[in-house]
Amino acid sequence: MADADTVKSLNGLLNGIAQKVYYNKSEITEDLLKNELYPDLSPEEFHALHEKMKSLVKSIASADMDQAQLEAFLTAQTRKQGGSGGVSSEQAAALSRFWKSHRARIRESLAGQSRWEPGLRGLSWRVDLQTASSRGEPSGNAVALVELELGRQGEVVIQHCFCDIISTSSLPVCTSTSDSDFVCLEFDEGKVNQVLKKMAEIQESIDSIVNKS
Image 1 (cartoon, rainbow, N blue to C red):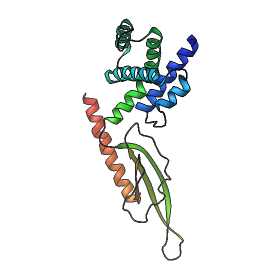
Image 2 (spheres, rainbow, N blue to C red; image 1 turned 30 degrees about the horizontal axis):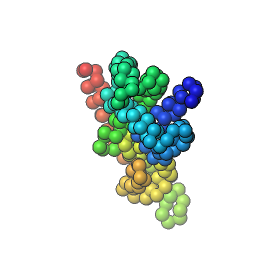
Image 3 (cartoon, rainbow, N blue to C red; image 1 turned 120 degrees about the vertical axis):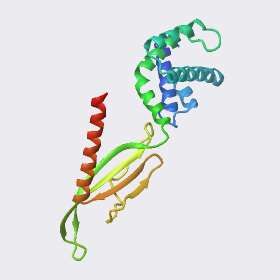
Image 4 (tube, rainbow, N blue to C red; image 1 turned 180 degrees about the vertical axis):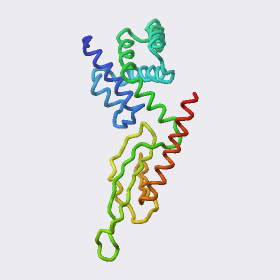
């Protein structure tokens, strides 16, 4: 394999490992990576390479290495070449490039995986004009429909139609996908003003804490 092909295959292998381990792309399999990147290697040879590179990526990611730590780590690994866990200079260079490109995203993925409770992933809203119950004519009362999308960071987002089953009551409507939960809320003008007042109080409290520190 020519040098350019070696670099391309190593980059592809590391990207594939990241997609599978950290970005929840289950369709990226070891067999797929072998067939696409290293068709000439035996299954045993590719498995050994795959596991070695995955182990190194996990070590780098779990320590969240900065540039100096990464260089020291890779230097130590190149000195072990030929033994267990050692890497070649080409592999070390590929790992260095990979980590520079993926560090922030992998850190975010790991933070999301370690968070037990879901957080706010998205918020959408619209204003509707209510209709009178007898004739179906506009009543003149406007209501705000707010949809909260809850989920853990790093999970795959599935598209959802905004408030597609919102009820006419003020009770929240909850739906879910395999990755997100959606809560739809209905507010009249009075409730919107109450929420805005509470949000202003929260902002004042945050500002007072930040200004003290």
